[in-house]
Figure 1 (cartoon, rainbow, N blue to C red):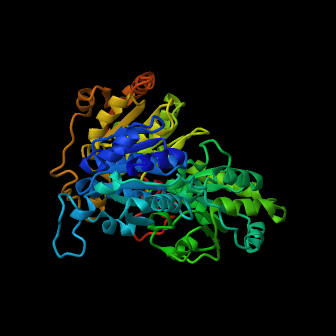
Figure 2 (tube, rainbow, N blue to C red):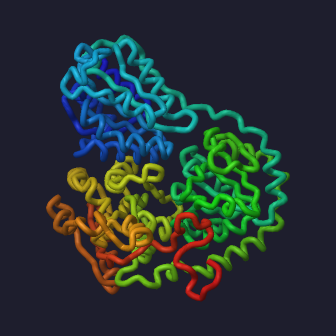
Figure 3 (cartoon, helix red, strand yellow):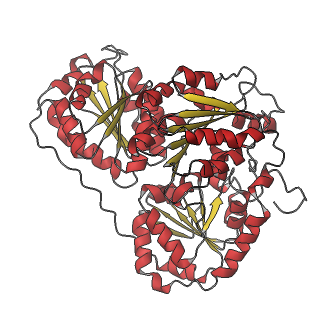
Length: 568
């Protein structure tokens, strides 16, 4: 069969049902082949970065590698941010780029470029993929497709890229389409030291990161913590491992975490870290303060991650699901007799720091209250998807997830513009239920063009835009370190009338600017069933993300300090 037809057959056979893309001359053969396969939904978008983010979200919802396509040159380079996002957040994805004909490639010549839009995308993405190759001939295509798809899934998941010249797409392939088997996790290392430490601990705590979700271990984690009554704090990427009302859920930790989450972590005598990378936003810059008074046990599939920044007392290299299964098998030796006192202490800490108290100085609408009330207004949402910036932290601090709801955000890459296209991906993977998008005025403008995609596809996105007329997260930084000189965050920055913009794309929208208007506005957003709707929430420019840890301070000391001058 024709090589482009083989690519379509391979994707269909291996469970790919959505391909996001922005078309160009070098992908037309592949798009034509895919268009004749009803099993695949081709989703044209208006920027390749947005297409990449959407594919990432499809993968995170389904577990099947997300697939996104782009033409050579600017199309391929526009994918790079989305490729990096998949790499840093361990999301399996296959990126396919078209390329000029092989006889137009510059090869070993010293010229900068031979064919029009010829660009060496393989070399460019080498550092942010698990593998990237150019397909030299159609005879190599079956093996390379299979290897790429398997590599994306095995071990620590991540993106791969295949660059396919135009003439290779037209060549004939004589091969059967393989089904790529799911990778088999390796056996877990010895966990007897952990069992002994866990039994001896009086105040144990689990820190759950994104690795729990990417290894498919959410159910196993819940069974484990419920059986042994071990409380759980989460990183930003682990927010959705437990629903809001779960008895073992404590909250978010980190530089912008819930204050009570960090304080509980300070009192833990054993910290079991599952799939969290322990970057500076999770630990703070003072590593001695982070690990003081506790035994640190870290479980991660990536050996290099176990050696980075903080050397754990007990290091276990394992897939999280495999580790939890091994722990469950040998659970008879784990004691939980002392957990009641620990739970009472946690309740005291949480009760002493209500989330309302952190926003006591807010003028106008409190974004934390907006996020909290979304749970009541739209309880059937399949997911919350955030952009990056203040909106992201408000959402992570205050979101009240129901049992089967997801929370998607850009973690390692921290890319503004993630929210809207990622929500499109969620809606494509999980149709039939609304998707809540929480964005800021800055992030919303990065991929604003995808409102047309939302309207064209009729996706039920409930879009909340927090608008404080500035790039608020960086503005906070400028207040702290640059004496309030707001270059490019306030000075020289602007945002449009988002209601008018949404209406121009054919999307219902309205604005709200006073606390007394909020309940009715959220009711309106919830009533817009079966179609997209946008709520423009006007905030005071002075609205801050609180609490937060100043750089260099221990993670347990957050600003602003307590009003009564007590411990932070």
